[in-house]
Length: 536
Image 1: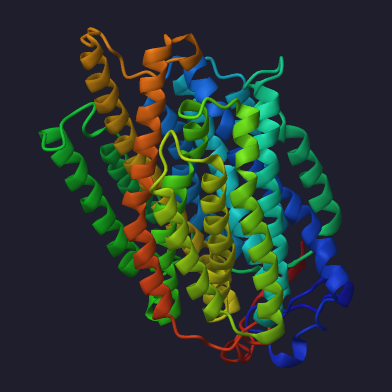
Image 2: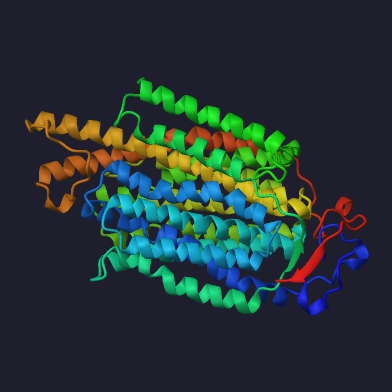
């Protein structure tokens, strides 16, 4: 049996403890105190992604980057976040959660500092990889900690708080980023701004977060993690560069696809047969809810990240907006997300019913994406804002509740791995979507601009793939670029729409299981497994 721990020092019995060892449930105030530092950490993680959004066109222009470089500034963070999320989740089942969150904050801060000082696109992309490692930890661990302290039935209200923080960071990020870019600080200030918030989150976590740690023999699946990262990376390189750096049907293209799929096949074998503590426990997919929620997460990632990440570029390069103005336009989508995440979380906690919110949310996502597929450089901005609001409402009712559906069917001993698996596949879908749709955007804009310039009698033989500063272009050529970006952006949403439909199909077939009112599944509250419980 575990060593006895004072009630004030712990909030959860060790995995395998009997029912009599379970402590009293934490009060709402105690949970909020413990979550305060985590929510601030989540805010800084989300802020790192959103604050740079409106700065990207200026960054790419300043560092003389291309549309491919624009894509990879986003993909680099998504890829490292994707690859590291399941690792953080597994570590959360083995080590101190507070120590892991603080480590993620330190890694994130180092990446932010390097990005702020980056002299080139290559260094910036590398720094974004480091940032993504930290963001992957913060994203995965917040969900795990909530699952450690709160029953699934009550988890909806706290998922609403997460949604509110997500929305706040998403709203304030583009606004803060736009103001900073337009100020003397320039785009580099967008990376410096996260550092004091990260320091504050670190200090608050040290003071408020105290969770039990189950110490047991540790087996980290380094081989599986390496194979997953390698396989996914090769496929993303292929999607991003094919059609520009080499032909789709070339030997290079074939080699990248074959190598990526082969490595992922080996990764599946390692996870299923070799790893003692697999990064992604394949047995989790025997549960129907987990399998379908994971499939839906991949599709949502492709549709959401893949399409919406280029909206800021649309507002600046197609509608001639400043970074600050483009940031203001994001309020429509994030406002919808904020309202629906809070309301759906509250009602789910009150009723215990969650599937209707997933289905209704995905229907709205499909409607929003379909309407955004009609936009071009001349669409009324009020209409664009309305379409974004519909998409935001749908996403707010869907994203957090997919994780909740999986956690409700998962034993506490697998909570870290299961929670991070959903986040992993959503991020992987996002990485694929951003890469593929970014390549499509680049190809379409280049085609339209080249055709337009040729029609004007302009020599295009020396045209580069870099994104020009539109303010310096002659009016006719600037109008051509704006029209090309606008039309190509609408096409991105049309391409993303089938993935949203597939996500809805997955959600429809998820079986609704009543939200349990215990931290752990009853079947897991069996005689104790030898473990040592220590204070965080």
